[in-house]
Structure formats: C-alpha cells, structure tokens
Length: 268
Length: 256
Image 1 (cartoon, each protein chain N blue to C red):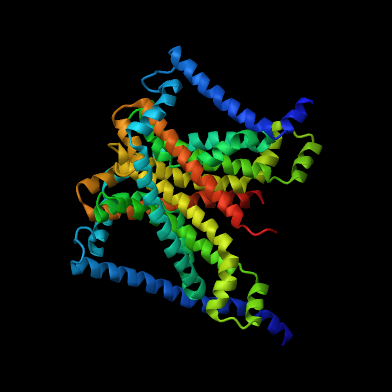
Image 2: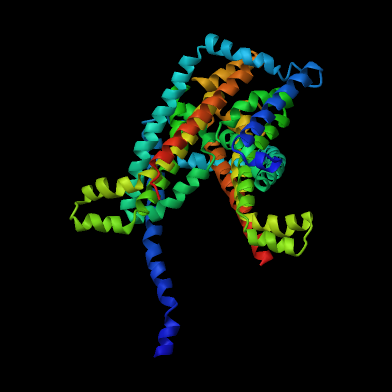
C-alpha cells in the first residue's frame, strides 16, 4: 500500500496541474476568439473604413501571398544582413567596452554613467548623422543597428563582469591561468547569462533601429516594404508584413535565448 | 597622496570622464581643421556651441518642447491610468492573469514602434498618432510591475489589515496600494522612458510635432551644426527626464 502510494505520488501534482492549466487554456482561446470575432465584426460593419480594418480573410490571403513571393524573401534577407552586421559590430564593441568597464572600477565610475544615461535616448535621432557618415545605402542602416544594440550589450557585459564570484577568479589565479585562460575559462563562462541577456535585448533594439531607418529612407528591406504598403494604402499587405515581422522578431529573440541555453547544457 | 589614493577619490572618476569627453571634442575639432575629417560631414564643435543659441531662438524650441511634453505627458497619464487599472484587474482575477501575463510580457519586448504606419492610417498625421504610439510602447511595463507590486505585498501587512477588519476597498487603499507603490512607480518610470523614446522617435519619423521634427527639419535643410545641436538638446532632455524619474523612484523606495 505504502509502495503503491509512493508510486502514485508523482502523478497527483501532474494531474492537478493539468486540471489547473485547462481553464487557463480555455480563457486564452476565448480571448483569441473574442478578439478575432470583434475584428471581423468591425471589418464587416463599416463603422471604420473597410480598408483600415480589412477582414481576417483578406489579411490571411495577404500573408499567404507575401510568403509565396521571392521578392519578400530577398528584402527580408537584406534586412537580416543589415541587422546581423549591425549586431556583430555593435555587439563586439559593446562586449569589449563592457569587459573594460566591468574589469576596472575607475573606468566604470568614469565612463559608465555616460552609457547608462545615453542608453534610454531615442537612437533614431542619430539617423541623419548616420546618413551623412555612411550614405543612404545599407551602411547607415547597419550603423543604426550597431548603435542601438551597443548600449544594452555593453551595460549587461559590465554588470555581468562585476557579478562574477570572486572565488572563481581566485581559483583561476591559484592555477596560474594566463589572461587568455582567465578570459575563456573563468570570465566568459561565468558571465554568460547576463551577456546572452544583453545580446537578446540588443537584437531586439537592433531590429527596431534597422527597420525604422529603412522606413525613413531606403529602397530595399522589410522596413521599405512596410512604408511602401502604407504609401500604396495596401492595408492587408501592411498587416501581413507586421504580423510576419513580429513572428520573425520573437522567433529570433527566442533562438538567441535557446542558443545560450544549449551552450549551458553542453558545458554541464 | 599616492596615485592609488588619488584614483580612489570621488572626484577622480568624474574628472577623468569629463576630461576624456573634452579631449575627444578637442581631437575632433583638430582633425576637422587639419582636414582628416570632412567638415561637410562633421561640423566643427566650435560651430555647434553657438548653434545651440540659434536653434533655441530661431526654431522656437520652447513651443516644440511644450508639444513634445504634452504628447509624452498625455501618453504617460494614459499608461498610468490604464496600466495600473489593468494590472489591478489581472491581480484580482487570477485566471485572467495566468492566461494573459505572458502575452503582456511578449508585448513588452515586441517591436511595436514598427506599427507607426498603421497608426498613421488610423489617427492621421496628428499628435494622436504619436500619443498612441507612446501609449502602446509604455503600457506593458506598468501592467507587469503593478501585478508584481500588488502580488509582492508582505503577508503580515495583509493580516494586520484583516485583523482590523478592513473592507476590501480599505485593504486596497490602506495596505496593498501603498505597499505596492514603489514597484508600481518602477513600472511607470520604465513606461515613461519607453513612451518618451517612442514619442520623439515617431515625431522624427513622421516629421510632425516637437523636438523629433526639429532634428528632421534641420537635417533636411542640411544645417549640420543645427542638427548636431538639436540632437544634443534632445539627449539632454532625455537624460534630465531619466535622472528626475530615477530620483523620484529612489525617494519612493522604502528604507530597509
């Protein structure tokens, strides 16, 4: 009996959790259905201009059409390339600056307040300057992506560097590890989580910075396609692009987080 | 006093930071004057300083500042009222909170500012597009922090309230809300920062409104010193706003 009881124990919380999860799923489904129905009613009622709130069918058709054109993938590739290079440039410089600030108290106290206070300023205001420096082509968009992601990555890296357990550093020193070994065996693994978090934040703002720059002045990229759909008043296409873009942005963010998680598992 | 002792003083890091900034500005000035940096791309810092006065006087910066402040304040008031109310609703109705909290968190990290062409279609090229963009961007942190603050109220405080037989409204106004206020303000502060970023950003993008439009105007006129001065001015406003909200947050934080 006791054994049977013990065997049954793990199953109990699981079924309870399932029972608790069910109403939540129902509520979620109800909210989604309500929003979709509300949208369709508004679209069909004519209360708002039909083109401003197109029917769900029109949006669905636009998504299918968008995803079946090679032109969209080419523009998506352009944007992805700009974001990727921007993230590489801004991320690498952010990482180096963050390491320098996190590793030296005087440098941190001298320069970190500038980063801390410049971080929350709207980066898009630098776009006119970036156009003058790098031209109207992809260079200025890459620069916008780099500037956007530099601040969160630098600040996260500096904070991560300061949070490293002093014991780990002393262990490395007691093994007479050289600077490279200290960096690769102690510092980088120990500050992996804040750095990955910084990269995730950086990726999000790099996508925003690059796309906003594309909507302002560009002849290629997803941002350009969005503003083109706006200019042509092709609302279903604009909704379709925004939906796909949100999915891509959230997916890319989750992928970076997953990669960070996977590397942690491998190290264990 | 030794070198190590000097570096440990409070004034040294400040002096080093300001000194490095001054050295960088002087270097740019020198590099432009000797022709290494093209002066048609980067204006002389000595030209930017007098441009501040010109921008303030000729570009009616007070009116532009007032407009940006109005947009940010309206959006800020909206995120406070709607965000705290929604946070309270989700705190009270647990099932709704479980169903939607992750959605609100996802919305906080979603690139909502890219919806500005959509808002342009709905609200037109007006201040309302800017206000609504600021509202959408600033709402999620207020909701999330309101829930966090209310849920984090110490059990002992609630029990004290119950022992005094407080009604539901009294428990909320006398115990829950005051205890959650510092955390709620953290959310409002984050929301206000997102709001301000979006307000100025969308002003720049749609070329309408106050400070954001000023930068766009000056850049389109190819007034380089003016553009740089306007950017510096916007950065200064953002930093002042950030410092002020940080100060209020510290003031509200309970003493441990």
